[in-house]
Image 1 (tube, rainbow, N blue to C red):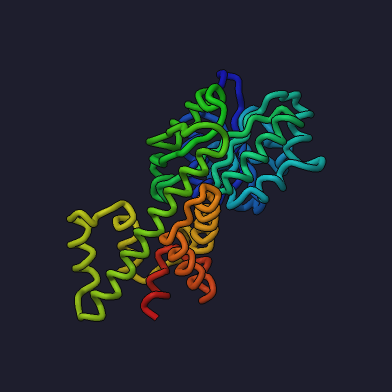
Image 2: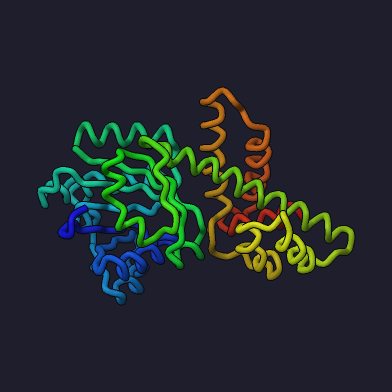
Length: 293
């Protein structure tokens, strides 16, 4: 990046909105777009410029914080799309950052096509740390893409993350995120099983969480999810539906390597039951509801 390069962020959901706020504070300016315009009110009050179409947000560096690759692809075509916006501004080598968790294979193909046909450099930079990490600007980014493009994005990544690691070429960030999601989902599942077992024997849920949190079983997952398990409030947060989607990517990666995973298969079955029970839009810690049933 150069001092004159502009940055935009598309997708102001639970993760995108706090990321946008941190980018405004650190960079001084930011263009934002969201399919539901009302979601931009907070960041506009902080100084962001609101675009009415993706084309208006087609600047040198475009960050997307969307659930999956089809939503990113939908931003590109038509007179209101990113491609038209880049052409109108004569931005010949834009950088498109995919922060959502998507298929490693699909994002590699997507990046190759955009580079060949439009000169767009795609960097995949999925995130870990949840909404609290996004609010504090302390996310962990797993990054895939051309080394020079990734290095140029340091001011952007520094604004939203405590850790930003380039894993390799395009798609490698998504592969690392698939590994991350195995650990996250497995930790949630183990804690939900432990809480259920403890309560069946008359132990206090709160006491168990305190004891686990101060021992080897303590983790960031436990720290962030403990209050949800105590209050039973699973609204907001990272959804069980997205957790299931991410585990599908992990299974595909394992199969592609010729190393199918019993753990991933088990976790897929558990989170599939959460979605089938109608809890897919709740935080993934709502797996406890399914297990206790």
